[in-house]
Length: 282
Image (cartoon, rainbow, N blue to C red):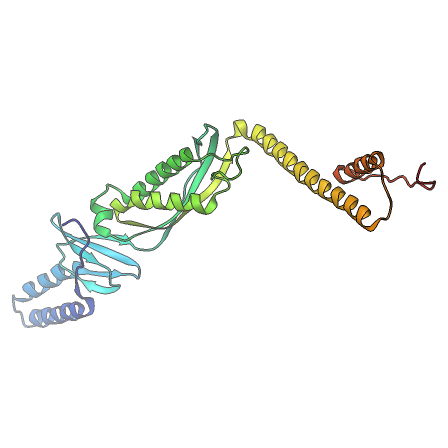
């Protein structure tokens, strides 16, 4: 047997009625001074340990002297052979938020990363008999999976914005993590409902330097966009002046106008304009 099978117990209510009848019969026999009341009372004591309750989204694994008999998943009041060993296994979805672990990303930068995992037991046989402790197995395999994931991708890439990284590729990274965990936890009968990165940051020893690098990269990118927009606006202004023949500018005045507009458009501070009230030549 290498997979889960169903076990059908007897109704607890039916067996309870039998036990109550045996108790009543024992009382009658005792009143009649019959020695057979010992047998009926003995049967009551033997049958009573077989009663158990099963809550919704719970299961009970039945083992008889080391031999797996099956798993009960129907909630309610049941009775089974008192000699059976009963092991409860929850089928509810569980959350696992791992501790932050320090690993190196693809390019060798130390980072801190953690995983949030939502999982549940699907195969009770595998959960109990294929691994030693399925809850510890989930934790250890989650840490191993997130370490492997961090080594496959860089935290960020300032030189190539199109490269998939841990910080930018949320959906793809989480999907890769989830698939990896599914393959790892299948041996324990664990179903992965959702897996995603819970925390991601540079390690403290390089966090300050990387923050300055990100700020510098952001400033350069913003300046590039500003200059690109300013050039387009200057070109549009010159084209409109020429097209509508508002004023005729020679090359020298065009250069002066371009210089002034670029200063106004690219400056990171407010510019104080100087109004020329004289002629065009002054």
